[in-house]
Image 1 (cartoon, one colour):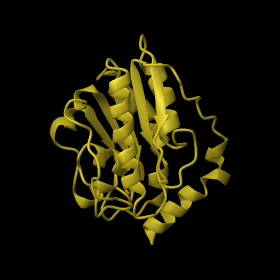
Image 2: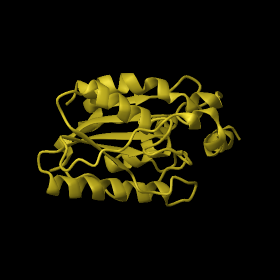
Image 3: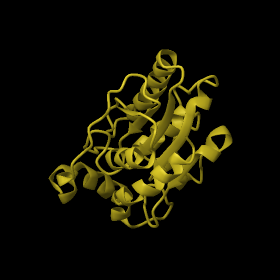
Image 4: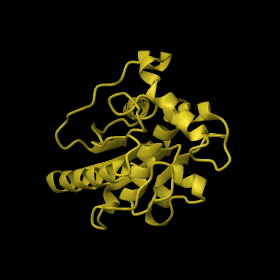
Length: 213
């Protein structure tokens, strides 16, 4: 019931006060130094995601100087369908592979919020199957492209409620925010609103990423 309430709250954001925030324009720079690939949360509005993607991209633009940034909004339903996260997983891998081929010197910052964190987890080869709006892995960033991923920024990551986390080659490049009481990422969490408060972590996430690029 708590999870349904949390997802319902996200679906209503279009009429909430948060919706008055101004979303940053996505950069369309050809072969930018860094491509920010953002997977929004379930029903989350915004260009890259109102709660996480948009504020994180703005913070990255402020924190990372001397480099050009582009952005990509992962193309997937971000709904409650069984194939939603898997669709996003495939889109992330296809996009990163295409960019790596077209722009050999480009690096990536992967951003995922809520279901979008499942999408990013899967793309790194970490299954979100069994998590809230999760799925099995359907595609993985190839080993040859993996070093180009400079940083991974995750928020409200549902696999954490299963006792899982990012391990292996991506671990040192990953920061994973889970607010106290967030029922999506914390087993037994009861604070539905905690899942909607990750905008306040945008600066910390950008600082982390700036240290990796």
